[in-house]
Image 1 (cartoon, rainbow, N blue to C red):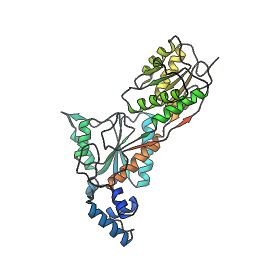
Image 2: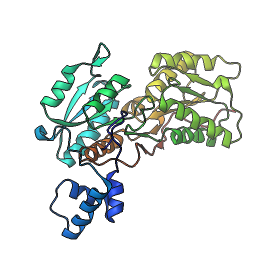
Image 3: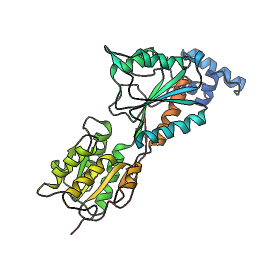
Amino acid sequence: MVRTGSASVAAGPTLAVVAREAGVSVPTASKVVNGREDVAPETRRRVTEALDRLGYVRRPRFDAAKSSGLVDLVVHSLETSWSGAVLHGVEAAAHDAGLEVVVSAGLPRIRAGRPDRGWMDKLTARGSSGVLFNLAELSPPQYGWLDQHRIPYVLIDPVLEPPAGVVSVGAANWQGGVTATEHLLALGHERIAVVAGHQRRMCSSARVAGYRSALASAGIRQRPEYVRHAGPDESAARRRTLELLDLPEPPTAVFVCSDHMALGVYEAVAERGLRVPEDISVVGFDDLPEARWTTPALTTVRQPLSEMAATALRLLVRMMDGDRPESTRTELSTRLVERASTAPPRD
């Protein structure tokens, strides 16, 4: 059977293995599995024989008998520009796939160590065929609950490392950290600090690792006092930046691991009577609308949120059709968006 999460179920060949055995493409094998008519008889015979020979179990869509062309999207909040970008990507991809999206804000509740049946009852009542999660994190009971009910699901930009086998989509965070730091190095900065989120967050650790790698490649000594970790909000980033500015040798540039935190960096710089970028250059990460609205406009690393969400929806559709992605982690590339918050350091 196909695995739809972290819990182990009976192992079996993926659709890709069946396609290779039959000498056809994965989409063609999927057509045969799903009873499509647009397949040549000889091709259908080869695929069917491969299915039987390998013991492939045709996994029906979740509650297919009641399916109404719906998928669920669960986000942490509907009040942020981040969620707006995710919703835009999911809706566009769902439209192309002929699906409708039901949006929920917040995690399904857990009572006595078990997820609240109310959310599950609503999910099954409306015939949803799968779920996309864009949340801070899921708990082990929630993963187990999804697996127990054999509900296909995909994580969008998970905060923590998902359990083995869970399908997720994210950005190339390590490369983004490299790109941001290389941009500051190219401007002539050597005293470059980083203000990151919590160390346990996947994206933060990867971006800091990219920052360190870029410094090492440039032969720049890494200063431990230049690495500061904060929460995801502006106030924590402001406090960490004030600490940096109070060092005997403060940095001339800061790589901030989110645009929201960069706003806190701007506050700290102004509080010390300094200016961006004349006194200190700032690079963010995300390219949210706020990055364009700040003064000066924020140079930042763009992660393709809408494209990540659309990719997650397309992977979910494959899983709903009984296919299993070859890789459980998909990463989309990032790129630097240069604006007005970076400049060469003062002499």
